Image 1 (cartoon, rainbow, N blue to C red):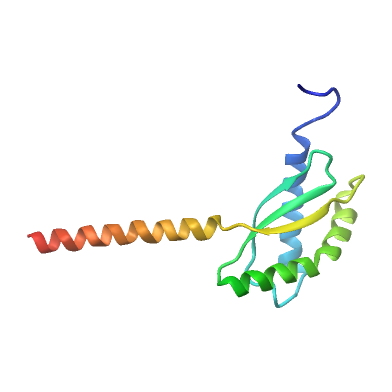
Image 2 (cartoon, rainbow, N blue to C red):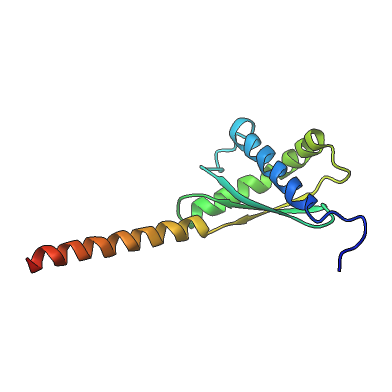
Length: 128
């Protein structure tokens, strides 16, 4: 049941803008060496716009992920202040960073498919 006066598309729109602004900050302003080549994959904003979960991906092993997460959490205060200044929201959302394994999963699937094709090619060459 929809409540009157609530626009359920707003969190998606705000999430898109937050993702853009955070990406800009990571590229241009945040110089923490712990943050590697981080990619923000998606942003989920609560309905009341008071919290945002930012999913990120980074290539590397577990220690690289943990370092990146520590660096992102360290920069969280700066990011919140900047979001408040740039977006002029009534409430500046609390930011929670979470690792998104989907890019690694897709990379692994691509690797498996490539290996299957290579195996088929070698079987065809041997059968001739």
